[in-house]
Length: 143
Image 1 (cartoon, rainbow, N blue to C red):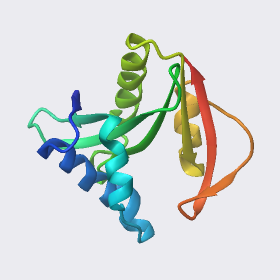
Image 2: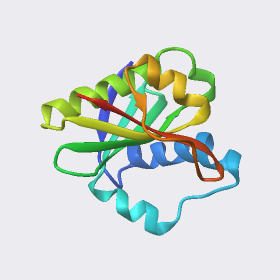
Image 3: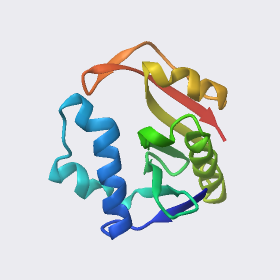
Image 4: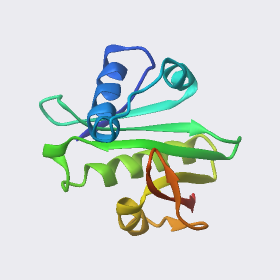
């Protein structure tokens, strides 16, 4: 598995947007707005490719403060789930964050993903809330 940074508005970035839509948005009958996409210009975009160079997963890191990043839009293609790709992407994002001087990673996890993040050392902060019409929990990890 190759996990790399991809630049905004490149063909690779467009592939990650399609995967995020397929996995995260389409099942909820949601789409990305032009405003949402424009905000991603300053984000860090990671893409996970298999050995045949097929996109299998992606995630986005958004700056919250000079010491905190927010991980969001974590998606793994349906036929590639349960193979450690999500874990590898999270670990890679943490490594990138540390190298760049960040001290904390935050995220909003769907309730069904909470155990996944707990296994990686994240903890919940506060109670359940609704985001994109489904239950979520704020989670965080000190790096």
